[in-house]
Length: 321
Image (tube, rainbow, N blue to C red; front, side, top):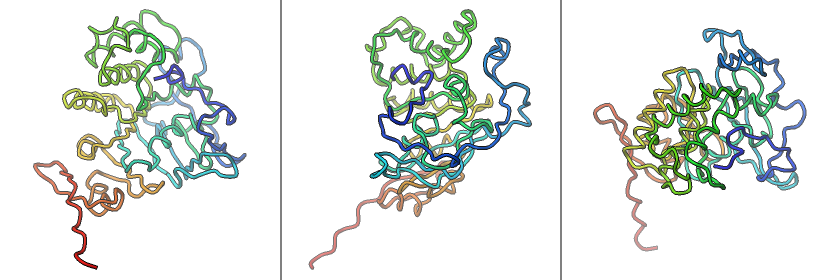
């Protein structure tokens, strides 16, 4: 959980750790920006924001069109994801599922602005992501990475307060927001603890509190519950649903397929570096889709309204020659 994750820096291509290939001129993000409503405090402070769009007229929170992401030097670049198109609307929780190496985290990095796409377009509220400053992008989306470690010694409260760095400084309001975020993840009693002394699950809850405190319309979460016990995992997903009920849009990478089916409105199944299925959990979580994507036989059935997913035994090898 390095400091760059609070107001995410979109590095020039030469400085990218991944070696991502920048889009060619004219390939992506060329449409006229639509207005996006900022928070009341942002508009009152007169900093860069576009107000004046009602929630009824507002475009999708996130639009992705024909996206491709490649890494590596130009002569040996490798496509990680391609032909990805979808949108997120206010109030939606969309799960991103798929096998290891399918490109889920890479896709999330591109959607957050950390990796430049090789082709296609990403828009926040109708505005091309490529045209947004770092600060304005951070006012649109908050990101939680898989790695929640912190390089330096900060208190838990310090880390959560970093979520407010994208917004104008309002000490009283910020204090209230940070306090409420800590309360929601049950870390108020840990606020003065050094983040390095927390368990992996506690650090994940702290990182999620920072996302809550950032107070953006779009949340991009990469396996937020992976290090949590079952109780805190379910509480976190309940918080995700609560945030969506407030009008936020959430894209969440998950490996627990049953939890994804239970908590998400729609699922995107990524495999072989592209989208294999997108739709309701019932539409995506079929034995045919999952068995093909994970290269393992998977059984799917419904019980008491829930989708039950379990791996099958491997087929017995043939006897003899």
